[in-house]
Image (cartoon, rainbow, N blue to C red; front, side):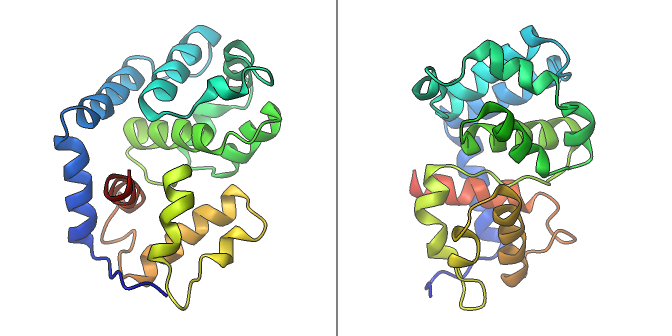
Length: 194
């Protein structure tokens, strides 16, 4: 059981900390600008550029998997999974489908790639980011009703994403009152624990 009680104002403070940070704020806006300039995921060249930007700014460490997957193959996979239509409607199984096609557990990259497109291009909040900071610190925000073990047992992205939504609901931070709550929560957890 944690001692942390979250409220919307806490999430906004964390989000504002990221946006006002000289390094991370600029990179966040850069990702937004690049995605808005190249919104589609139809050509390998456009997708490869966006992969590189997201990997470099978010430290998804794709280079660690170079012996299992390369940039061209990853870009090709994204062009073939009906990415644009699925991310526009918030199909969270898209993260798992990208990972299955890669044959490498790229949860950090795939969740970020989907999340940024969903947020910046469609003003939606359907994807929660999963990375090493969340993996290490999410249990600190768990509640008695929603222990971290609820999603950790047999990790899959859909269960994790649902857990984040349920956890925020438990704190009274609902999608109706806070439409970008997943992004705000991600920024809060990441900035406080980076």
